[in-house]
Image (cartoon, rainbow, N blue to C red; front, side, top):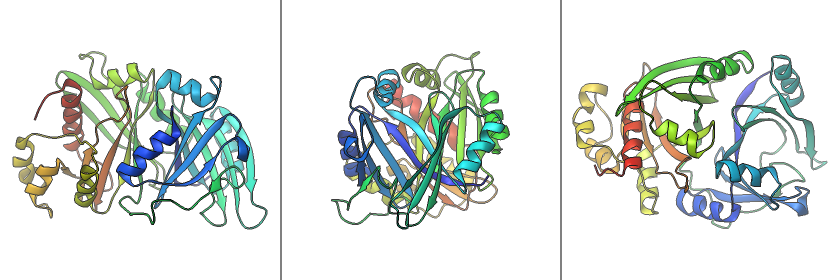
Length: 357
């Protein structure tokens, strides 16, 4: 079984058209396809958003008993499916079940009877999130032949602000971090590559990063410390009603351009205090981008053994203040530094407390 990368994420949302309008206007993710009852997807309406290798499906239930509608009722808008590209979906499905995964859907083949074939199967992941195993043959333009009608984006050519999904951050309840790490290690063959205990304003949280052998699928797993005061991870677990994806990190080759562009479109980012930037040269060394530009935009810098990484969080765009996005640029860095995670979560804490920087 080979896992090549994140094929797509599917979000269950209350209104797919409204969510697509926001992600399109603010982030440049354009609608490239749609599916619904007229394409065999009974009881739902789905929109496919794309930019480069980033694929996000937005699905809304058309009836109260549809799984998407039930998910939104329980969790609010959020990531319900993480699609993993594999070399052979049937073999991967069988192998995962043999290792202890729980079946959600057996392999199904979609084809246009010409040059495109897609095979998918599904197994349970964490919380109510499902992993969809995706095997593709033929042109990448098709998503699920027959189930999605592919369309030309109305907004013109892709802007190329983002290249791929860098990682997903996942919150789990206290006591569930180790079992979740073990699950991805023993069932999916992922490797733990980074551990950190983070203290923020009296809160404590434990974090472990797991990664596929291909290095193209990375999950940051986080649990709150029950012995410290409740904080933002507890808030997420309460408002989301259980484990779930806290943020999606989109990789860019120019974070200054990306953040500047998104800010002009009204996207709000979390800010950091000036003291962070004063200490930056001593902590990470010389940074190619002027510190004044980084401070003005609120971009954070960290490093690992291989290079630097630049990161920033958006504010949550959801009423429950659960899911948000991260923009990340890697300048050689392959993992995560020890300084930014604390700084990012301090920024998130200030957002939730309404504190001005």
